Image (cartoon, rainbow, N blue to C red):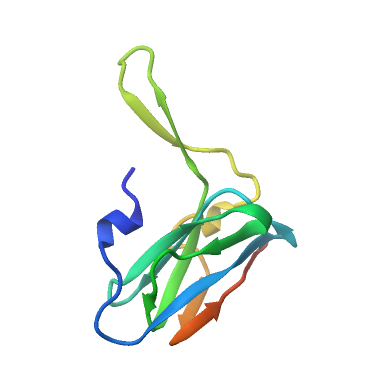
Amino acid sequence: MTTLAAILGCSSGSGPVGDVSGKVTFEGKPVVEGTVSFLSDSGAGDEALLGAEGKYAVPRPLPTGDYKVWILPLVTKSIDPKTKRTVSDLKPAPDIPEKYRAQATSNLTAKVEKGKNVINFEMKR
């Protein structure tokens, strides 16, 4: 499975940028495993891993603007005993509802402004 960062490459251009961090919760409880992905209409974007207390920090500044956001479970890899090939699957994550797992169905958005941005996301059933 290819990550968003690998597809997009470097996300910062010559314009203003903002540092993005925050917290992801599901029905008020922190989501401590997964990936938060950001993508703008211009194709800028990046992703960040969720950690302790549901916190995340995008590793590089993002260009300012509006972003579509979705949240994916972690990817697990195993070897198929029959084919001996590596198989990638999403780790079970009952605290990340299906609608938030795809850009097309997630209703999460972010407005990145110049400077520091703390953007929290609350998921519901």
